[in-house]
Length: 503
Image (cartoon, rainbow, N blue to C red; front, side, top):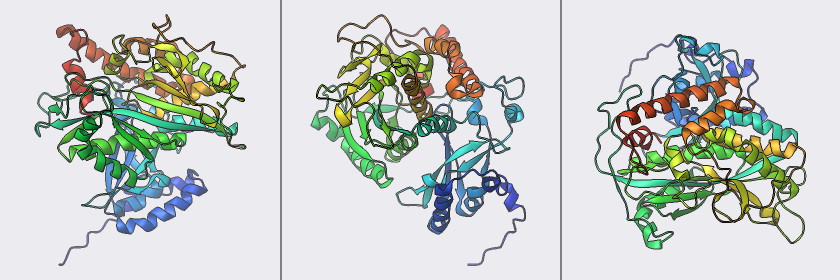
């Protein structure tokens, strides 16, 4: 077969900036070596999906031909800032045509930023069809500085503080989500638009639920979750377990401990490929905390965390002696988490829907600002002893931005470690909730976020951007509720349309 040869004289300048990575010294030796391996592997790839996580924690991407990616790898890729400007319903929350008020000049007029692939994250996705690779990117301004609205950059900054102290966090994921069966292939576009979400996917439950960890209940999800688990392992994710929770078709997936950046990258990849894998098999996976599904029990994201002294390999949370418990360093870390909890809560529970899980009727919800040994009603649950001692923070919802949720907790814990040694008091007794509670609504969390010290973690531009995004989301929900008064205890149509498909 004969094919015409098309000339591309401007190819080098069509994406990114020539020699952008080299000119700005963006890669260390590990990434330089990884880039060479990626270039060698491209002969066996048809497409490369270049991805980053937006402020909502949703994966945004462009799918590039292999030939285009060869140039993008070291030059970066031009991206529109749209993912920084839209709220969860795709309403414009940051005024890029006027006074946006977030202190990033490039936002004016919606000018491009550059997304630079991180070559150590490059991997080929399993499966038949076009051979497609996935690679995460880091966002940069056109002058080569990290983009101030980049979530991944926030986590990197926090980790630099740990490294400077000779410390390394170790994190373990426990993620709950819902598997449902699609009833039709309707795209849900009727009535859709900017800030006007159309119909959510129409689904049916895969079982009746409410037989916790029942083996027969797992059998009803196993035709999907079994092959999915194998798929996740082919991606290199350290899958540990799959189990059926209480709700109808509610699954918990756990992973072995990873480094902090790997944990955030893994969470973004896990959620994205799980939704894609289930969709291609006539099912729908959602990480929305409480979907509008009869008898749904809210889902949570528990983040297990400890800190290791890199010189000795010692777990700082491990107490000496036979009594177990938390070491003084572990208690200081817990004190940091509690001290900052309300001000940064928005980063762990960022949606209107996520606060349904924190209602009083959910007995195992982490409503108390406290810590306790093996108590699932406290925000911080201390688990294990000796070298395995760690803190399980139970407050997050599964659709939270993984970079910001993890960064917020590591930041708060480190603030506690670096403060004068303090004791957060005795472990909270089991029983009724204590007076000091976590925020009970997105509005309450947003008020605490605005009034607090979030910019110390995020930087002023991202703190301002997050405020605008959440104000827009809350404003639209409030306007809808004024015309459709919500029924107490029931998930609204607005929430289902807003979150069930996207998350």
